[in-house]
Amino acid sequence: MPLFNEDEQQRIKEAVQAAEKNTSGEVRICVEKTCSEEVLDRAAKYFYQLDMHKTKLRNGVLIYLATTDRKFAIIGDAGINQKVPVDFWDQTKVKMVEQFKQGNLVEGVITGIVKAGEQLKSYFPYQTDDINELPDDVSFMDSD
Image (cartoon, rainbow, N blue to C red):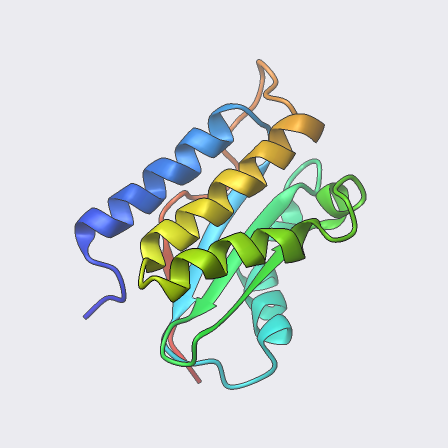
């Protein structure tokens, strides 16, 4: 059984699409039940596995969640990380955790998407020749 039902997956996908509508950046959500290594290492592994590092402007953002282990990470590529304030991803995580603590997993993910999208829009505004470089669906991974 997926970690999110069809309606929840659709809400997340629509949030990604809305965020990307105003930017040339890319946002992906990657979910699995357990995380068998350090959470940032795991997120980095999937960042590369999902080709997030191959965007033209290196402005991809990955939100990784291991739901059973209650771990998550946000990773931005070199292009966006050079632009956002040093503590931006930590501040975004705090806002997400506020939702998670209330049992609102989907709302927490959407909060992260919205915050990432706002920063991407600021630094990488939508261009008329922009193409969607990466899928917007939630990526469900198999735990090792």
